[in-house]
Image (cartoon, rainbow, N blue to C red):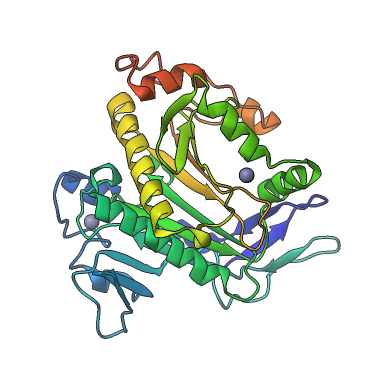
Length: 342
Ligand SMILES: [Zn+2]
Ligand SMILES: [Zn+2]
């Protein structure tokens, strides 16, 4: 069980969740099966449904089913279930330790795993059009499901791919954490957006569309290496239309989002190989001023003392160069060129 603790004097939070330390890692066991369709030791594989909590939503041929304790849905396309080692939970106990001037809340919230395919070794970049747009539809559906819950202020939707990116399972999956607080990073952005005349994302989008940092665009989205890049090969994907929440996406937008995300991941594969990465949605519901964006960060460098001390990141690959690699203008970079450690 967990609790949300507030900073001594700033509106910032951390989650104390000792239970998560117990979560097992599949990497040693199932990594050897990473090329295979099925791994007996993998808890996320199709056919191994009994090894996880019952699915809250199993998507199968466009319909949604739910498991019961006794009966599990088979042959699903996408499968969502509560994290067995949640950082937050729907009925948390009161915080254990509090003192004068120290604020803590029960660790209320939801923590869900979204398994993206029943096939063990399948990566997002290998998904068909139907599979990748289907996954974007599941993202929308799950985010809406939790945004509608009472007391939920923010839904964090993200993917950890690879151990160094924070994944404890090899099998391709995303996660969702629904929080009772809005993270400071979004609050700060929103304040700046509200103080300006125009949406700054709409403005930067126009700039990046014609810049040397542009990687790719389709009818609905633009993917670029942001001018302000905090790490090598960081990529932002922005919808061309001003839209704040995945829940408002049309089927056309979902399709185009899947298409451009898969294209960027394929470029990562070509340039960086099988490097760990994170992708994260920045979005707000009931906040039309915000402009949704999806950010991708390959885990090439580690935040060291300076970065932790200052919040200022030293990036060894300029976004201009990263974009030209990802567009395919420059051949595969060497390890030294991308600034990868060791
Ligand atoms: Zn698996
Ligand atoms: Zn905008």
